[in-house]
Amino acid sequence: MKFDIKDRGLAEQGRLRIEWAGRSMPVLRQIKERFAQEKPLAGVTLGACLHVTTETANLAEALAAGGARVVVCASNPLSTQDDVAASLVEHFGVSVFAIKGEDTKTYYDHLNAVLDAGPNITMDDGADLVSQIHSERRELLTGIIGGTEETTTGVIRLRAMADEGVLAYPIVAVNDAMTKHLFDNRYGTGQSTIDGIIRATNRLIAGSNFVICGYGWCGRGVAMRASGLGAKVIVTEVDPLRALEAVMDGYQVMTIAQAAPVGDFFCTVTGDIAVIRQEHFLAMKDGAIVANSGHFNVELDLEGLGEVTKASRAIRAFVQEHTLNNGRHVYVLGEGRLINLAAAEGHPSSVMDMSFANQALCAAYMKAHAAELEKRVYTVPAEIDAEVARLKLAALGVGIDTLTPEQDKYLHSWTMGT
Image (cartoon, rainbow, N blue to C red; front, side, top):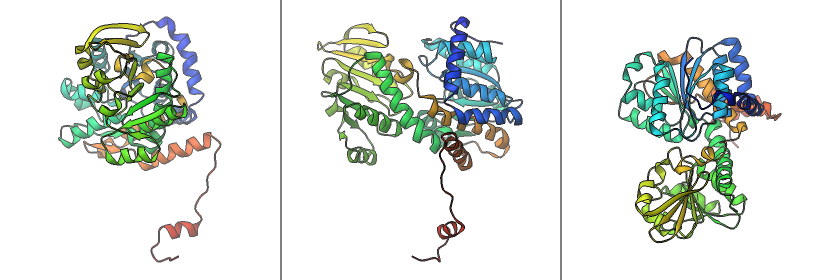
């Protein structure tokens, strides 16, 4: 079995952490038990470009139980948990190509190592596997039946490909499942982002001006948690509806140019490029802390920051101090990469339980329905979304009502009046 990890000696530590995460993932556990009986992925080589975390390990275990040969690489150079990677190799027989802190060349070598396995289904977190296949490894297309995508950023890229008519196989947008983005993006990103910022800086959030760029589901989650810790939350947006929603939720809304001089903390969660640019860094107060929780570090204009930096040093783990030409200091966390995974452990396993349940079920759906699917981006089938919610409620011991026949008839009738 081929692999490239930091240290196999970390495997036992990783196994215990994988087990701990699995205890909060009852939905995925039930799916794994079902997969072990039904083998819906028998004969499939599944290439996954995901954050190599304890939660991902539980997903890989479920996919393998379903009969898949699983090959994994990291979807971000700083998101790998090296002990988890070691355990996946040592205890689960999964080929892993991921090392925390890998450089760009190694990152792409690892992408290609997964593709060298000849995947039939791709599972992406940011669409890098899909992009690499379409740009550099088109010879693999004949063997691929479909894929899944986990992130907002990746779905944006894939829909752009589909709109241009260049997407060569069907993809299910797992990110768009209600049981994914309403919980993973909001509660998972909210908690884990604040966790990463605090772990990296040990700074007090209460009383600070906390600027959040972007008020999608991730931005909503970060705002909720920052506000809960006592921060004065400022939101920047380009979408008038989201901006209005932020106002109604009780937050200040302003442009990034207005927010730059007053913010103590900045966090980007937009999925776009150059959200905080050179002129904004120059306007920041001395000691401003800047982080990103969007998928790629391009949300921060790090090249522009470098042009106005006269000195730079690592002052703490995952904290880079930039002394600007104007004498002020700006602190960039985690090289501008996903702070919740660079400096912390990512989303809590209980929300990833639903996200990865969707991934597993959608992989099986793709295997079963590939022949009838077109080369475009599909939303998660409603029955899968509903099943994940039902299983989660059952695991939480929560019961809900069902419609009576009369109620169901009323909701489907136009003849019944008030």
